[in-house]
Image (tube, rainbow, N blue to C red; front, side, top):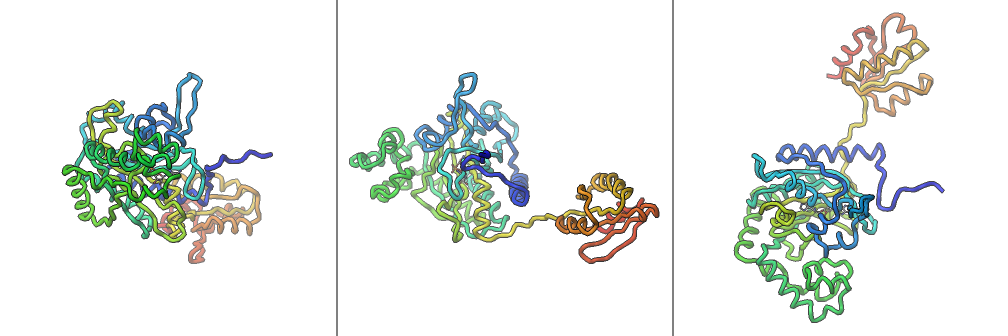
Length: 423
Ligand code: HAM
């Protein structure tokens, strides 16, 4: 039996990969405009990093990590997300001492979660994410959110919904925590064993339990927004004010808690409400994590960021039937007739490429008609035809495929002439 691809992973083939490249390019361009700089961290880290940051009562850490013991007997985990590694690197490389503050970083790369594969949910997926470290100005919360929205909008998505919430500071969280314990404790026996063990350790996690989602106590659970102290409330109001100033529309969802433990204050998700997008509607998630740098051994430093997967972005584009502006055409295809001409196209092709033209020739000894078909398949803008006779006369025939116009060109000035036509 032949070996098949592992469940929840994908091969991205030519024809499809161009869409990925376009999204990645747009994301990089946007980061350049917003002044976020790329960071590349390892694909695997010490398991403890994710236990300490994402949190050991979360589904990600408890159920979804690809964890193994390496040959040196260390517990290693394939990264399930990018924030933990970014903050680890920030602390380890002492970026808090950088002259330029806040430190604004972005990453793009594969993440791994052992989840049940379905539409929009993979075991290996590519996240694009940004993290801004070192500022607790609510304007940066608005900047981060607007960067994410801008990317989707520039790609042509329209059916987007931004939901925001505040998870408050430590004091607000503690007050909410007590209220949650009081709410769930009397009937905790009706919940799954995970929720039962979360009650004391981290009752907020009960709110995003997939299994007990429809329990009646979920709907009536105390909402964090009612427990925000004055400082947290005022911070949240400023974020909203700045979002409005940036023309970013949003809804407040007091039940938005996010599935990772490091969040406080601002939490947000961007959803697609395109018809046919499927059951999982979240395109992007993020928020503020003011205690994380300290938790990972650095100085007290605020932080905020988001991550989105390219897979879900592509699914949303498909659901909204957005055609990405992909250019699949090449500049020039060389057609040859005769042995000497064929040999000559080897050098000519090299010269074309050196001069910056995307170009191709035949490698299968095909007849002239089939070579023309190949040129069509490459959507060549120009086809240059060289026969042994032309070669002897030091000429080449250049055809503009858009207009059908043909020109006989002196071979030595071929590239120059083509450059002129392409201008
Ligand atoms: P997250 O909500 O776990 O947050 O994931 C962020 C995004 O990654 C999701 O909105 C979705 O686009 C994508 N994603 C997650 N799991 C999968 C999957 N199995 N298949 C396809 N796409 C997936 C984080 O990861 C945080 N680190 C975000 C963040 C950055 N917060 C602050 N900074």
